[in-house]
Length: 131
Ligand code: C2G
Image (cartoon, rainbow, N blue to C red; front, side):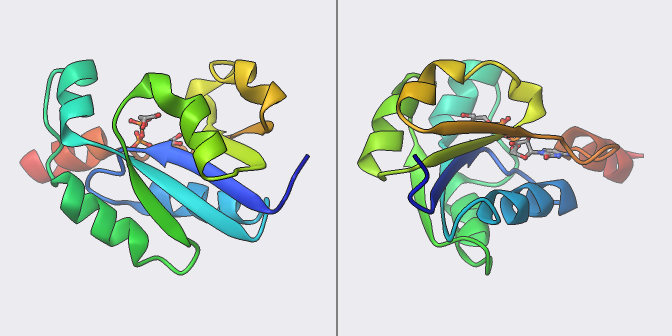
């Protein structure tokens, strides 16, 4: 089923090494990596707050990475199937905090969950700076 095109999604706020590692590992499952950056509005809707960095800033950082080929804005969590088809993805990669959540898409593409990098998160970075 794999055509070398990998897709992944995330907010990637206050970019850190956990984000970098999942993107590099996602890319290693093919030869083209497409990344959906969740919009500010989607974050407000789902988490009740805006990210620290705007969607434009978050996208600019992700698009500059060597392992990333294409980026787009993820406007809704319900559109994953559409995005997979629109970007012709053969593989969907997500961190294992989403384990099992996207198994329904396995009729569209291969679905892989990768372990998160332990002991780092945007929330922890913000807490450290605050102290
Ligand atoms: N991640 C990781 N290790 C960490 C922190 C994050 O591997 N220590 C991964 C997450 O598992 C995710 C990606 O980095 O696959 C982006 O994480 P978030 O920015 O927290 O994205 P999230 O809010 O989970 O995505 O459709 C999904 C939405 O876009 C939300």
